[in-house]
Length: 452
Ligand SMILES: Cc1cc2nc3c(=O)[nH]c(=O)nc-3n(C[C@H](O)[C@H](O)[C@H](O)COP(=O)(O)OP(=O)(O)OC[C@H]3O[C@@H](n4cnc5c(N)ncnc54)[C@H](O)[C@@H]3O)c2cc1C
Image (cartoon, rainbow, N blue to C red; front, top):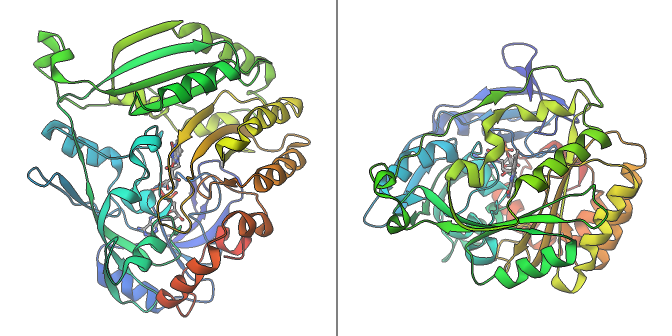
């Protein structure tokens, strides 16, 4: 993910390990140091980076300065108001370790805990509960931002500075450097999740089970077997288990949260290890492992939300060429595009063992926030497969025509035209951004690629 060339020069990539670029990486330990770096920004600008879990080129800036804010890691939890205040460099992992034993949980978690508060806000992340709770940004009460003139702002979702607040939610680090945020936590009485599982034999069944469960479950996701022609899947849905669902023994440690890594992927993996045969075998085993139907299973937070965090550096299994994640959202009226996308990926022979389908609820007021009402599909595919680029370009067209869009935190390849067409509030966002950053200090490889 990052390779040190000299003390400060590092080759940075996203989680997909494609498109590396060299930047001066500066660790910052104080807000004054952030202001100093913003003031001395060169022609290639400045960008804050979290844990580099965005897949593409959002958290890197070739020839520029990349700020590492991991020292901004204070966390406090107010059990009366239920609010968490955390430094932008604190990870969701450390937030959970701090608040779960106190009976609270983060409002939104992605498929990994290894993301920072700055990254969660910058990408306006969503979880399996978007249809109920919306994005992470919708739960932020206030945030501290250093803008392009070095000025410090306290931004809140309503009031005078609401436009600057919402431009920063999902603003991909391009409105300034977030140093701290206060957000709502949700109360829990146990650290276990009560999970219902259902296998579905084809995509229609997957989608109808999910649509029917919209009201019933806080968290829902479907894993799709992209190798099977029917696009069968496994739907898992759940909610925080109330303490009275736990056995007497479980109640003695009801709020324990001690996730462990079970393995580390070796540094070198041959390209091509993930091929149609290995993915077919994996998918068959994964489908069969799931119960046909089960309800009320108690699972840990990490097993339910973050199974991949158990294998450190699992992104290496794609070998030196890396991989990309294609994630899009389409409105309910274009739900047929889910099948079209799966078929396209299968035709081109893009093996994926990690393809998930989720429901999204209504959008929030942030102009660049990705989620809008409908269906979202995310598929990890190895980079460099013949025909993949054209297949994805074709899909982009269909998605754009249907009123859908791609997720910037996963993107490494869409065109500036596709982006501008599918984020219709871009110019409104740009106006606010220009006010916060009149010198154009904040930029990234993604911003240059998409002419943001
Ligand atoms: C296994 C896996 C599963 C995932 N699942 C999901 C999912 O379910 N839902 C989802 O929404 N996402 C998901 N993601 C993507 C991930 O949540 C986002 O990319 C997130 O932004 C990564 O956080 P980070 O701290 O690593 O930020 P980075 O990737 O380092 O940065 C992301 C963006 O935030 C900006 N940023 C970071 N810190 C700051 C700051 N202090 N101030 C201003 N801007 C800042 C960066 O400039 C960049 O544009 C997943 C990623 C992985 C690897």
